[in-house]
Length: 370
Image (cartoon, rainbow, N blue to C red; front, side, top):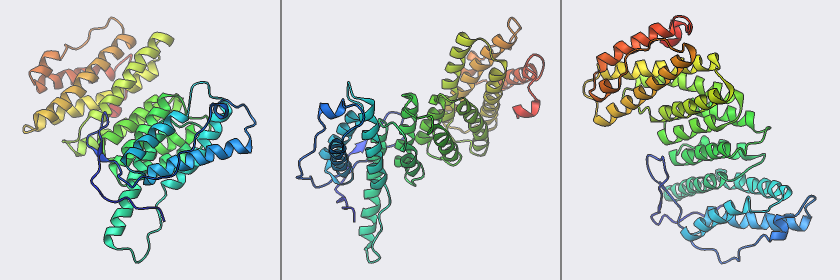
């Protein structure tokens, strides 16, 4: 059975974009000497020898074990060592392939839920559960730097965990792997399906932001369509919960907006893409404005959150209008109204945009703007 972590009060991971902190493990330190991978192995060309494969196996076995059972210092060193060993300067494709393949196998074993003895006490069960949670957090952090086939299986475990900290780091790993273009062609459909499934039930804002970022970062045509579908579906989530933060969706829309501007400058105007994006943005603008009109006792933070979404969508509307119907008159700007909280005035402007978007040359079906 995997060694249990003594519950000695843990240090926290404070990550950018997180809405909370998640604990790191504290353990007794191992006395085993740490294996090393020499530069000759890192630069070797195919085929790699059985002896070199054994060195890689021993290296990964040792450092993954530290992630699961080391003390605080050992865990920190394990994360740093594994991440730097994944893509050292001058490394060969064969080394990268074999190292990542072996590491992902070790990680997949480490993050599986252990069998709990039937006679385990309540404290022992809680300790095992916390040990697993912390192991998964640390391995998800390491996954940020992995590449090659096999990563989807480990990410699936992280995304399905009941703990928000594990899901956050699994989501961040996908976002970074996608950003660094490390997802193989074979893995892309699996990752997309995994993200789509996870986004349909994610409730933790920090994890949600990273999952949306992952879709935005994926260089696959269907990823953008899936992202827009997810964003459109999440309008319903906000309609049911006036207090829910728009930050994850706003960030995703902002990222897509920047990419749409870049695509337009590089490849010219794509009317279908612009109209589809505008349709989704409009639904958020209308809902956020209606929520501000209908709810007078919202906190300043919630008001600011909805205000930011409305400001972004107004920028999107003006960009879309300029590209689809250049030179045509636009509704009055809402900057001052946003500052002065003139929600009724903004609602009038949104109605004017509705009239523009449902007529030529946009011709968006009014039902799609509801």
